[in-house]
Length: 386
Image (cartoon, one colour):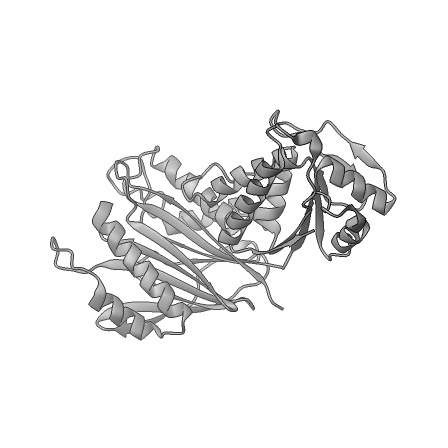
């Protein structure tokens, strides 16, 4: 069985620093995903340069089939030397996973990764290797649906409000926290942000070190079809809608005219509700057999804005989509559940929207914006125009 491999991370700069000394690089190549978390020595600009170079070099090499020995050798020979201590020092974790869920981890001086399986955190068996005078640990794993691998920089361990190490918050406590807070439907971004929020609270909003959490999670594939707007050629309405309805997976319809056409084609009643807890998001509607029916341009624009927040690694509180409105419901489906998304986009112009904030240009830009961000999340996105 193949899975959708979801990757995400959350990060916090050391208090007072504009740049983070940690860096996460995520690459997709064929059937594999590679995630690298690098932690540069110290903080600020120099640490950021070390981490950026390390993460990019390692991710590119591993994605293209390079062995870990070669990677470590290149890193030790390439990175600039920290003159204060005479070391070109940057710790890293590499997670390389196939869509089957089979993967491997290489760890160099970062805190040991956590394997969340069957609702509980576990330790992976590690093999120690000496490469170019450095100790690197290797682990193999097999992800099932809902499992994840979480790695972190050392800012997570001993997080506390003062300059001393917090011995009440170490790796065992991190595992206990994840055991109590992880949920099967949490995406990699969300579970990373949950732990990041706990660390920020322990630091009393003043992190004493750059702090980053990254996760790789396996989900069963979940296909979504989104229909936005009727076709330009109205003689193609029925075939356009039938193409959408024949799609295997979750169905979302956006727009008042579009939902009327879909309901008519299905021979179902379109029921308008008043369900929206956000005054900026119009209420949803209901069509039997359709998973979600929303207003069009305003709702899509709101979802596009939410996608910016979802991709922001600093948005520790901005990744919760449990509100009772169309934008939040759509974001939950597209960001946290979907593996692949097909947009059925009608090019017909809604004359009622001329000169309003919901005009066709706004809708088109919002859809393009949303599709870019969904691809940045690692989703497979297809656009069909009619």
